Length: 110
Image 1 (cartoon, helix red, strand yellow):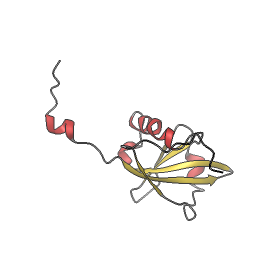
Image 2 (tube, one colour):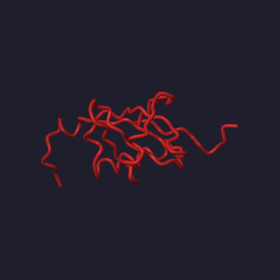
Image 3 (tube, rainbow, N blue to C red):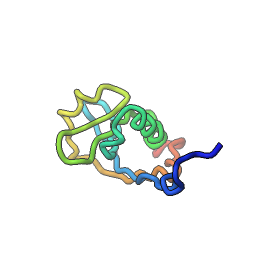
Image 4 (cartoon, one colour):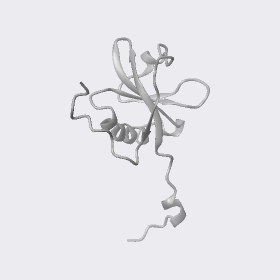
């Protein structure tokens, strides 16, 4: 079955490189990943959270808007209580290229 979508639209891919890191909020270690505001909604955000899971195994992941203005977040949990306590000053950002395989976390780092 043929798709009616033009070929050009099929080739266009969103930027698959994101920035993220690990922080401790209210005693909870979690991953924060910065994404475009259009990705912070049901469906698209859920798919992105699933793709990010192997990059941050066993950690809750919160997506944050990288656009100026009011903080916008999306997560599989209620992120509102954490937004007011975000302190990103000590967070080290890492590039996450979703086109590549995630790092191998099977071996302990010590």
